[in-house]
Every structure is written in C-alpha cells, then in structure tokens.
Image (cartoon, rainbow, N blue to C red; front, side, top):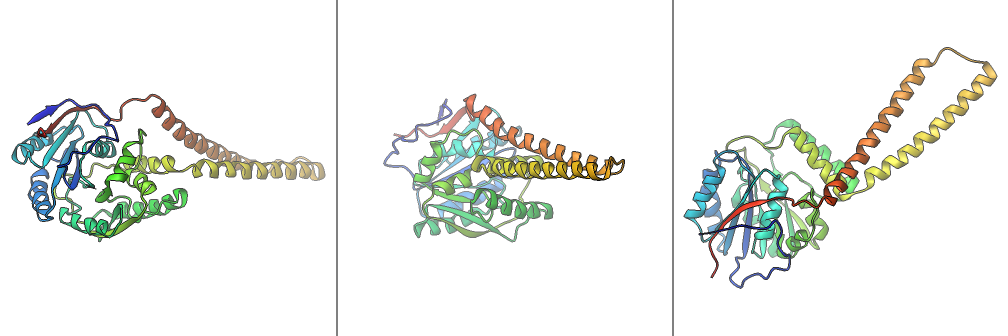
Length: 330
C-alpha cells in the first residue's frame, strides 16, 4: 500500500500506463457507513462479471461517520482494483467526481452513487451503448423510487433547463453515467469552481446516448440532497451553461419600462382632461410592489452570476486531498 499526498489537479495530458485498466468506476462517498458493506457485496461481483480489467475509485468527501475507515478496509481487501481518495473536508458530490476523473486511468469511466439506488449490475447496459460508438451515455431511471415532490420537481427543472440551456438530458438526477477517456480529459481541462458534470460532458460529446436503467429504494441512510441543495444544483446548471436568464430579464426590463412609460402618459393625459383624482392609489401601490419585486429578482439573478465570477477569480482549489490509498504501480 502506498499513501500519497496529492495536489488538487492533475495534468490532463498525463501519460496513461500501458497496463491501465479498461474501466474506471468513480464513486463519491459522504456519510454512507450504513450502506457501504452492501455496495461492496454487489459492486465487485458485478464488475468481475464484465470480464474487463477495472479499477474502483472511491472519493471520501469529508464523511463524518466511519465511511473513511470502511473504505480503507476495503482497499486492504482488494488493493489490486481499489483506490481511495480522502478529502480533508466536504466539497460536494461533483467536485468529488472531478477528483476521481483526475486520478482515473481507464479508457472508459463510469460514475455511480454509493446508495445503491442505481444497481451496479446496470453498468453493463452503459458499456453496451459505448460499444455501439457512443462516447457519453446517460441513464434514465425506470420507475423512480423517490418521493412525489422530488419526481415533480425533477420534471419541472428538466423542462426549464432544456428551455434555458438547450441541453437535452432526460434525467439529470441520475449519476449512473459513462464517459470516454477523451470526454473526461476535456472535462479535466475545465477549472470551474461549480459545474454540472453531465451537462459539461454533453457539450464535449460527439455522439451521446441515453439508456434506461433500474432504480431501487435507497439501501440505507438518507439522501444528502436537501431542498436547498437541489435549488443550488439547478442554479449551477442554469447559470453555468447559459446567459438566457440575464438576456430574458433584460428584455423583461425593456418591456416593463415601455409599459411604465405608457402608463405615465395615460395618467398624465387623464389628469389634464379629467383633473386630479384620489382613487387608484392602491392600484399604483400594487404596480409599485410588482416593479420592486422584479427589480429585487433581477438583482438576485445578477448577483448569482457575479458570485460565480467572484469564486473563479479567487482561484482557490476546488478541493483539497488529504491522502490517496493505492497500490504502487511497478
């Protein structure tokens, strides 16, 4: 076993060794102590059945439970195919996946959640699609086992995202996805602090596809995505890939300005013809509140974009790696 101190970013042109595995499976882990044993019991037999050389890269995203210890123990049991990246804090699921991308060696890379809602046995379906020439394969969850409000919110955000960004993705919430080495290398060259990996991959893909996969109830624990986290994720998705919200709000501002000017002309003409009036005060208040609300919404939207710029110009590392557990290559 070798424990290596690692820098946050790897050279995207790193030479891949000749004995590199054909498949890399990247799994972010955050407080998954209760479900890791079941994941290990299903994951490795499913990968062995593929008949391919493979590696599994677990990225511990600052778990506060015993997840890191369990991952280290699994590394000791299967050091030939297991690597573990240990963050020194919680940086988020997508940054954990980016760390896995920057360390993986496989010609094909599959991302998988640790909660077993996407069965590891379905990895074969994604690889079959890649055998047909696709370089980016997404998944569509069949008969989702999520709560009603999450399914409804997902449908709404899918439609909104498609209209705002033009990105065609049937199920943006499924992390079971497969990428070619070329797509992953292009993703590694992007240094954005906040991004949405599936959407970024679609921009670099030449021949994407989607396949239907199973969706099971969460084996143990609870979802790490709160309502706020889901809102933040969709903000990152929309503001990270489109200027349409700003452009739409600019057009709305022009329309409201023209209507306000027209209303001023109408009220001025009415005063000249009919004289001053006392009535209509509450209508004007309602109109004022509407305009103030639109202004505050616009300021918030602009602040979202400015905040992204602020995060980028600080040039802080996206994550900090405490150690990497891997077998020394000869």
